[in-house]
Amino acid sequence: MALQLGRAIGRGARRSLSISGIVALVLMICYQVLFVGSFNAVIVDTLPSGVRSGDAGIGFALPLPTEVAAGLAVVALLLGIGVFLVTARLFARDISALSSLPGNLFTRRLGRAFLSALVVSVVLGVAIPVGFVLLFVPGLFLAVTFQFAVFVVAVKDAGPIEAFRRSWELASGNRWRLLALVVLFGVIGAVGGVLGTLFALVSPSVGQLASLVINSVVLILMYGIIAESFVQLRSGSVSSASSFV
Image 1 (cartoon, rainbow, N blue to C red):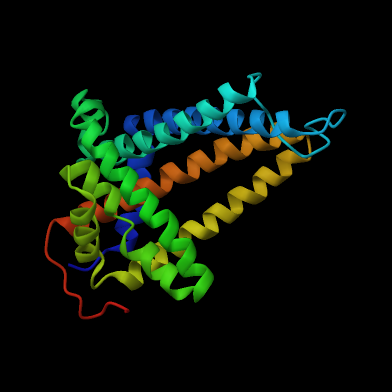
Image 2 (spheres, rainbow, N blue to C red):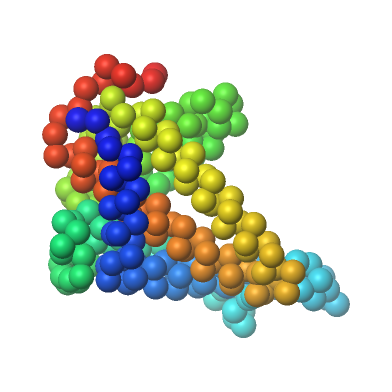
């Protein structure tokens, strides 16, 4: 089955603008504020005496001791994996169901799904940057091929190996179209980054908070489009004849 890009973008945006999308956006913003605020608190505590965070270009920081802030940053980072899992579950439903928020989507086999998503995130978090650094193309190939892995974990309760295998199958035959989506995401992300930079002219804290909100909106839009692509492709088998390898 060939991915319909126009439909993926249009219906993906509708998913992002639904009740489920709004809930996911709030969760995303909360997670990012918690992580960045605690991480910045650790950085601020390491600054030499007399150097203010604003002078060092550091944004907002939570008023926490270093040890507490470091622990909270780790917890927030792990919480982010849960947020992405729940977002995938919310979005990978029929559009008509996105106004509802069933409790089982937030709790179903969450421990197992979390561990699988953690492994997937770590593997891709290492492999993709390394691929970009080495020859660029391998990193791009991995980013395109395995962008459905977290959705497979979230929706199918699959383990990491099954998630990678299934994502490969879904991407086969559609990698050029999926590459177009990756490029689109890059452009949208770049525009969001420019807007965040403009807010930073007011103050580092305002700029960082604005960037977090904008980044969250971009991520939710991306997830909506990826979810629609996932829903399209999982409904039938795809041929790998036109895939780029």
